Amino acid sequence: MKGIPRIKEFPSDNRYWRVDWFGAIQPNPKLPREPVLQIVITPFKTPDISALPPNKLASASSGLVDYTEQQTICIGTGQLPAVCVGSIWRNSECQQQLAGQLTEFKGLEISEHTSQVLNASAKEHNQYIIPYTHYKFGKDGYFSKMVAVEYGGDPYGILIPKAELVRFYYAVSTNLADVIFSGDLKHNLHAVLNMEHTWSEPEEQREVIGLRQRFSDQDGWILSRILNSPEAWSGATAVHDAMLKSRVNGVAAHIESNFPFAGNTNLSARCKMLPTADPNKWRYLVLSLVRCSAAFPFRHLTVYRDNDNNRAKDGEDKPDNEKKPGWGGTRVVPGQQGKPFQSQQAPNKNAATEIFNLPTDRFGDIAGKEPDKPTKEQCEYKSVTVVKPPVDSNQLSSAQGDNTDSTVGTGRLNSTYERAKALPASFDTFIKAIEHLNTYEGFSAKIREPDELTRYIPLTKPEGYRQWSYLDSKSMTPRAVLIGDILYRGCWFSLIEFEHRQTDKCCIGMVFLDSGQHITSVVLAILFTKIAEYRGIWGNIPAIAAENIRIESYKHVWSTPQHLSSIIALKLNNYSEEFQT
Figure: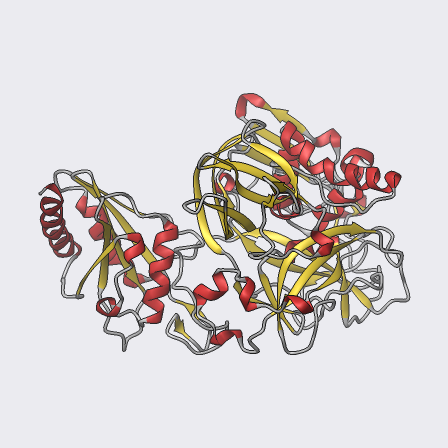
């Protein structure tokens, strides 16, 4: 997958392997500071998974993989941000496809009353809650922990591995993974934060945090949440506490954690459907979390770094000859995709630190927010040139280390907010037409905020293959999608436009449900897969009977946004009259 570096421990045998579970945490005698995490992987039976329909991959089907060859590999915990259950790997490289059906849970309540902790191997009425016939997490995952959240009246309606809670909410970067698994939050907090520059300003709903130099601004949001939420503090520190307890008791250490909040959230996840004793009910096994809307316990963040070289205002700063060196040490450079991470050798402390930025918009409450960085009255530090000789490296390590003989470099995975790109100019008329609909009596219309499910037309082949889903296959530019949601006479309609090539002859699509209810992003994602399969020809898309979706299309024949909005208004008036009858 784009941005994710290779991991050497995955097989390099030209086969596709699916990550099916996380196992225990184990000490790594070669890298004492960084333990390793067991990863349960299973090979696909089909040599070329590009031949499989996307819905087959999304199903996380047991029938697609060969469980007789399931095995366990171990990777450094600092590489956890790059690996999720359901990710697919080939020759140590993460692929574009991800197993699991994208699902949205609206208004999900997270509390002690709605959730409970289970082993992955737990039973209900003498039957495995995760049926062995439908999903195999391997012997190394047998005693791993899950959180069961009540959903649809089922106390086990949503099952989330605790390791996934850590990956998604806490260990979002290599440096934060080091903090979580080392226990520094409890036992060495000064290595993480300068507490003299860390405080709360509740009247402004602001947190000020003194970040040490190795942490990114995005890490600051996570650390501030941990410091200001009892649930987040418990979830972040439980990982190391459980490791210590397991060591004392002489048993395998499985990840312990919990949600970093209590209360209501909208949760998006990739899931595997599991049967229950009731043939009419299914439950959801979460393979990977995608987005969470839960509120942070503050609205604003100020990041203060005590060892940086940001200059003060002109005329007020100290002269450079009176400042301390602020940037001694090795270089920080963009990560090179050709270098794999490995977990057998410590990095050379004189090698450049290579940073891999992994775009994400996982936390809806802080999407688009930037922390404030106050101007200093005087800066105490100055930049200095690299004083240590650079060391060539051909592999990377996510561990900390003081080695000076190794040819392994230091690699860091950072979670970075994925800012939305400017919308294509071709969408301008569409946007203005949706806005103009609000001038008509009885209409309420707006552009839907894009999310992971609806931002682009999904790929129907592996990344890099020529396909219609790309606006330009050579540069692998995806086709952007824009959705206009319209409410008229109590019924919801969604108008859909996607980017066109000059040679395309495509139409705008209108979709709605017979019930008149709002169409979720999950349902639209299913529809977008069909659009990709039928190369944007709305008339060729078969009815999606299970979802009761009705589809109409309109040619690009309007001259102005007002003309388009008048056409839409006339059509919707006819549809709504049909609903009324």
